[in-house]
Image (cartoon, rainbow, N blue to C red; front, top):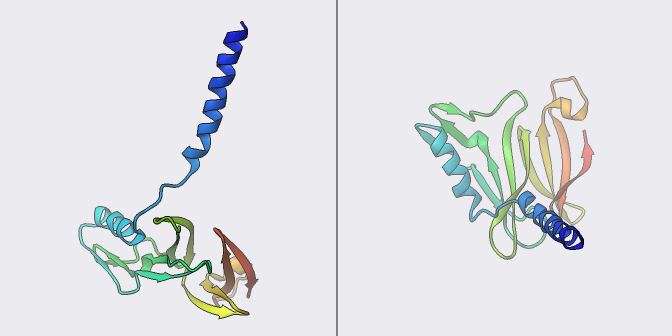
Length: 157
């Protein structure tokens, strides 16, 4: 009985120890290749605009990251196939120092500026007014900074 309980506990421990590996994201070699491959499989004819991918250090760690703008995709003659009245999907990827990238966020927005404020690089994202709890026609501006792997909202207007 004692050995059966010990074997059960060892098996349970191994299962619990393995769980985090299921939730970890697999690193991508290059988000541009990954994203283009997705649309090449999805569309019969696909074109990518010059602003499809931007490479910049979004979290101020000195390593170049990537932002993909799906509004720069023309899929079977339709620009931005996943764009809506809320804007187009933008996918944000961080590069790790060991090599490879992982996605930290996706945002539906009209566009963004990446600017320096008070010594830190921040995104000023133009989004649908409802994201600022407004009903008018003017785009909402949400300013965020990326710290580590998290987006921190600085302001909304």
